[in-house]
Length: 132
Image (cartoon, rainbow, N blue to C red; front, side, top):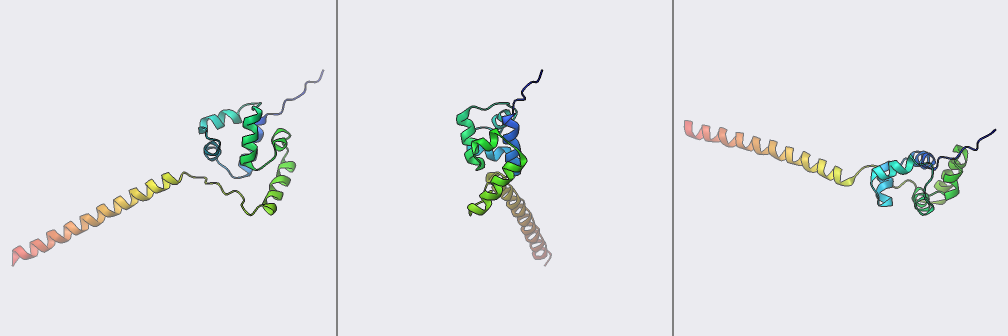
């Protein structure tokens, strides 16, 4: 007795996403869902067709490439995408707002150090003036 093995669509999505160098959070943002929902999708054996079509479009692969995943097929599709499209893997793998906040925090620390140095200069000059 043989049993047919069901293809795990979620794992296929995960594998293609990783090959494309895309993070779960990026896929989530492009789908308009949370990162946790993408994780749930990637752990699901099946995915509804409308969601699968959206994911395929974002990953720039046909739906069939996800349904009938194999390393060779997907690499052929990705390689042909590179030569056919001037834009390849143009997705942020970080949140730009996080980078902006980090830069703001660094600027704030720099400002505080400069302010402290100026206060020390003023105190030194006041000491010089009072000793004369």
